[in-house]
Image 1 (cartoon, rainbow, N blue to C red):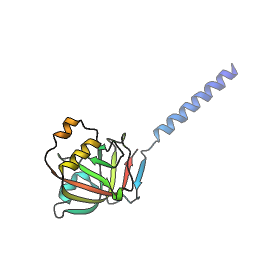
Image 2: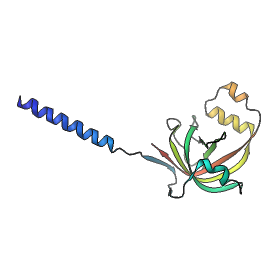
Image 3: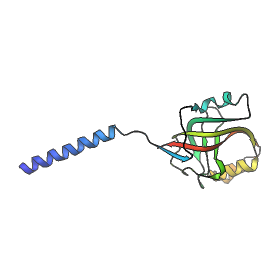
Image 4: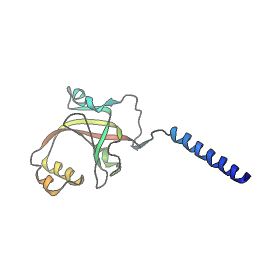
Length: 158
């Protein structure tokens, strides 16, 4: 009987400790490329106003990941809050991000944003990398003016 009481107390103690550690769990981040200070981060929804006076800017942005390259993780798209997403590639092809599992997570990116026309061939290549169907890829017939970002560093929320 005494052993049962001691065992019960031990089990309850372990459960209580486990619940405490779960409640203290914090969101973690993983850095890809060069690390950087996030103190001057801009919200990605401001990209249009940030790009009004220039075709390219150096900036740190924060936004939600919509998709990543399913082939190697060599690019990702972030939601901007408008009908256009921000395509992010990585400086000098020096690092990659996870190929899947980070969609919906917050990313903080540091680098250069450029407004430029993306060719049909490149858009089709990105669609293929994203796993789009052949039918969807053949529907891409016009180049697109879009914001492209070359990141030297990326921080992704775990």
